[in-house]
Length: 287
Image 1: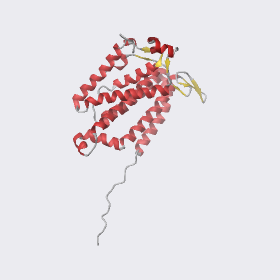
Image 2 (image 1 turned 90 degrees about the vertical axis):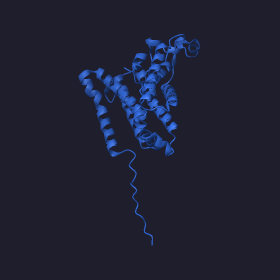
Image 3 (image 1 turned 120 degrees about the vertical axis):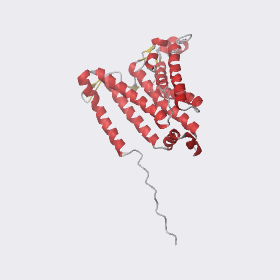
């Protein structure tokens, strides 16, 4: 009589561990109170510093997809930040209308596209640049990949710095001014608002918008980490040859990592341009 063999299978871990959820809740609680605390010491200046810190957290989360998950040493990630920022600046300012007569005839007050159109465009352009960077570097690893991506980042900055002639597209080192602020359903983040008796200045409004986006991106990263795609990235990071032998399409997974990381970089850049109201190539240098 055959006896059944006891199963040794271990239950699959929860999608988002309890410790991670607790850490997110602690971050949210601290983040909600942080701007009031720092404002009492240094005014709105330190709230603005927190805004930039959140932008860099978004950048770091995007870079973590490429470097942390997939193990692709990308030193030119700043290029996607620049692409997103200039996409927002060109599509949300009067610059192009001032330079091209046919655009001025269509948009006499300037090309001020809504955020719901500009942000997807910035994401799509940044993802395209990510795939364009990843495609010719699929066979490179380690230091060689780092050198190529470093060069890519500098090439984008140099292009932005010199695309003011013979046709003025980026306005060169002078940068693009009068970039539209974020508007969501008519809510202007560049103006002060009174909510529940509290007056929130623009730096506060952008701060809470960025906190919301950081939490969304963290959640997306957690879901990616525990998905089939995330496990495929980890397999490539640990041993690409073994991953390929197990049937993982390493080419597509690498391109997806570059593209997904570039998306978060493009979003961060678009928000940076709206927050600053100005972009110039010096904001995207490696140093």
